[in-house]
Amino acid sequence: MAMTRRPGADHCGIAAAMSVIDGKWKVSLLWELEQRPRRFGELRRLVPGVSEKVLAAQLRELETDGIVHREVYDEVPPRVEYSLTALGQDLNAALGPLGAWGTKHLLPDSA
Amino acid sequence: MAMTRRPGADHCGIAAAMSVIDGKWKVSLLWELEQRPRRFGELRRLVPGVSEKVLAAQLRELETDGIVHREVYDEVPPRVEYSLTALGQDLNAALGPLGAWGTKHLLPDSA
DNA sequence: GTGGGTGGTTACCCCGAGGTGAGCGAGTAG
DNA sequence: CTACTCGCTCACCTCGGGGTAACCACCCAC
Image 1 (tube, rainbow over the protein chains, first blue to last red):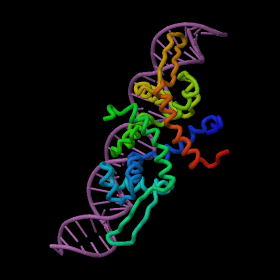
Image 2: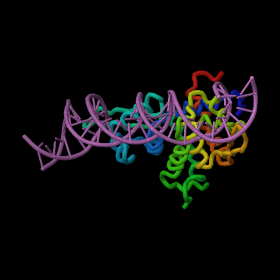
Image 3: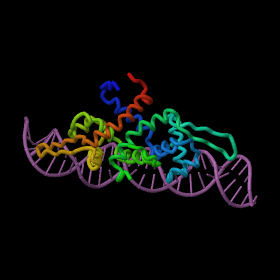
Image 4: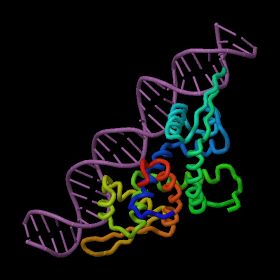
């Protein structure tokens, strides 16, 4: 860990990471994609409340950030599969402690 | 932890945690408070760009969420000190991996 | 011909987080 | 008397992320 003691180092890393997961539905998407690759309509059904427009937008952002991979199959009906990249899997792993903290301290019960 | 395999468990924990750090300046505040207790005006100077209104609002939110402690000294001129609670320190620690991920993968240089 | 399912895009609107500037109340410095 | 500090609070406004709905091109089943 070495912790270079540079003021703001991890703070800035957090800011950078936050900018990547900034978006109402991104962590949900990350979560759904962690399990297996998913199709567009599948994600739409899995993440209730998200609109097509925003789903497409946030997937594209995650794609340009290198978090998800977009695979287009030239079939009919058209098929597109989204999956996590290695970077995305790392990100999800890095979110683990945060999720654990939230689960431990914020969720009403651990039943 | 046993990892009950309950679908969405850590995902929901993340959502809960995100709701706590949701706010443009909260991670900056967390970072500044991690080092030592800070006064209101001090935070305002340390976090450039934040307005007094929003600074006060986000500090109060962090306070009601049990992340920071607000100590009022009945002096003149008035003095108020903000500090991290144990919960807040845990939260900061849980943000560590995320910061490390961001630093490693997103920041231009590791100098 | 009509409907359905695929994966989008576009135009338009809304709402709330956040910014701006003013004021306040007590006391001290000049 | 005025000016300044400190820690706010209030009224007002802006801006953009996200919601809604319509539309598209393609093909299949009825």
